[in-house]
Length: 98
Image: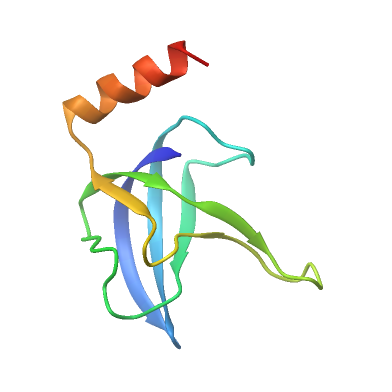
């Protein structure tokens, strides 16, 4: 889970590729750097992410069996909510309870 701002969007084959500025990582099982690439396995715009928008994103690391592909994947039904001050408060409260 991380707070990110969408910098760019590009369709690559049957997937959508987003360049994301990681504003703040929260709960994560893999390290994140300040700029990441986020992949969505469709081109329909689901979930709807717009360039310049800030979101709370719940994604997972996807590594194929050959270990030749290592990327951050957001399922088309994945959790992506627009970032608001309320989101910041909820994330801080959840972190305190862990």
